[in-house]
Length: 145
Ligand code: HEC
Image (cartoon, rainbow, N blue to C red):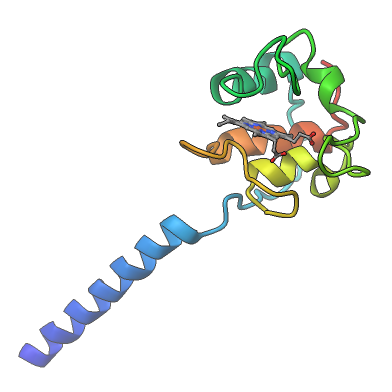
């Protein structure tokens, strides 16, 4: 029957529309169960080998080594972030060990708009995997490891 085919067309079109919107406007970060397998301990995230490369690839354009503002280079990033008061949103801290929601950094990379511009402000946002890495690093105490 034709009506049946029409109904399917409408349903498929609706799904495509909804899917399209979800892709553009959906949450930037959907938390994974923590730990993913409750019988296993969570992998430790390493600042030097996992978090720093994200900064180098996506943030150095504007937060360069030895720049005037926040320096996200391997030498200085840790000391510029962890337990450091934000320049623009004091008394909020850039990174509060164990507490992503209270960290300016986390709010910015997830575009929460609690602390102004999301990061990076132009170009591609961080991938879900990069966000997971940063969040887990903060949750595990934002270690200099
Ligand atoms: C196109 C330039 C640009 C890029 C790329 C960029 N930023 Fe920023 N960022 C800025 C500007 C400008 C500010 C100051 C205004 C503000 O705080 O929103 C800022 C501020 C910040 C702050 C707040 C500093 C404070 O004192 O609290 C954090 C944290 C931050 N950026 C992290 C990042 C991270 C992480 C990346 C990479 C994922 C990144 N930014 C990429 C331009 C950029």
